[in-house]
Image (cartoon, rainbow, N blue to C red; front, side, top):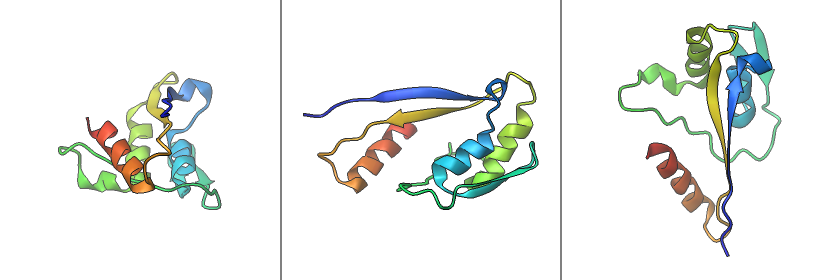
Length: 111
């Protein structure tokens, strides 16, 4: 039997959160935040199976780079109460292969 779980949260500056740090954690990468002047290194984090960046067609190609994308978001949103991003926690199906689940997640984001 398939179970469904979807939990959506915001990355908020008012909560002391950095969207660059959040992106580094989720992707298991090392990123530098220009806004805070800090490096977030999650390269030793395990369990990351997919790190796609899916952009709308009109988005500039340089945003395919994770550091460029999220530093641009930090720079554009100047307020102390800025809501920088949404984080989606989605339970995928055990009945599907990893590739099928990744394709399902891509379809969800695209639509």
